[in-house]
Length: 230
Image (cartoon, rainbow, N blue to C red):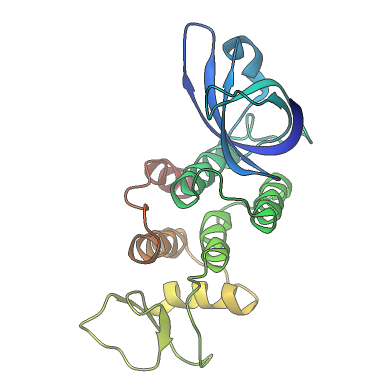
């Protein structure tokens, strides 16, 4: 049966000399994998985190859906902007590690689509990766808890901000903890150094490793780090 859906492109691998297996996070059906016959010639407009209008068919003999068309739902400049493109690769890898096949969540799709639009429209992209991780933590149900706005210490193990530094836990303080807390609370951000921005992203990746199963090494992080450090 022919179906249509919106999908956020995450990953592709070769299936044959001409075909691809492609992963999309879809609006209606969550994470799905498709076989795209002849896709190596047709997939030139697919880039990580790009939103596409998908046309596909069910395949009774396989869990793989048969993709026949993937057209951009709206234009992005990720392919032409090395900073945004690198951030898009990073975001796509994180999503692949935290969502599971066939899990449906239309609200999560809207959040991801909104994240794509924010990245596409951004003039300053340096804080987008850490903001994305902080916001995604909320969607995963593991956002750091802030009982008191004055608490300065981010206890990664306990998932909360605390007023007392407890050395037996993994704790981050100073400007890194302040940056993360300010975003959670919706405070205006200061002008942080690139070292603080990178450390905040490292902190959120470490936090995900503790609280979200399946998150270990994020390959794209090293590339993002180089871009943000430029």
